[in-house]
Length: 240
Image 1: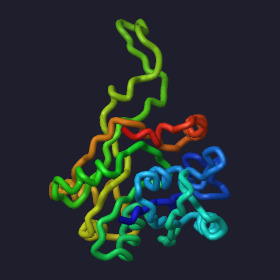
Image 2 (image 1 turned 90 degrees about the vertical axis):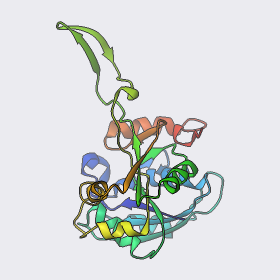
Image 3 (image 1 turned 180 degrees about the vertical axis):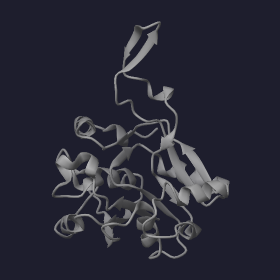
């Protein structure tokens, strides 16, 4: 099964790191975050990747071309890239890659987020419901000091528990071949166009992931992931 990684955006929210490289190539310790992402799949037995590139695509191409990229167990990763254009949106990037895989079910995810999603359980859930698409639903991490206030008096100050939050799109999609028909142009954002159309036709299901999930949208989040990567087993590799 092929894994599509969306890696072509400008990464403007972390511009300090992305002036000379695409966001998925930002280093977490000594390896790009995209390596950590692919390693999540590889250690679970999925090692075939197609990276949808755009902005600074040559940086990813050079990294792949000049290195034997192995997972944390020493096994080679099978990686290809497809340049889907500088201004193409997420829907277009997914559909352009799916066009090269006619009739194939795929997993697709963002190149800047890590999670200890069980791919086996995700696929089992998808195969059980018979719909065209599955999105992994996650709890958003608290980013600000959370306060409880009673009559203007602060009664609690600190991090908000993730379980208090609602569910958001965490990537890690499973997509049947017909999903390509729900993307109408390269300029479409997958989340606000194709997923909405799938929802209206009751073709989108949510796999609830209660475990670790962390995007890298800010320098603070990069630093947090860097600290976690130093652990003997990073949280994105702790599968239950």
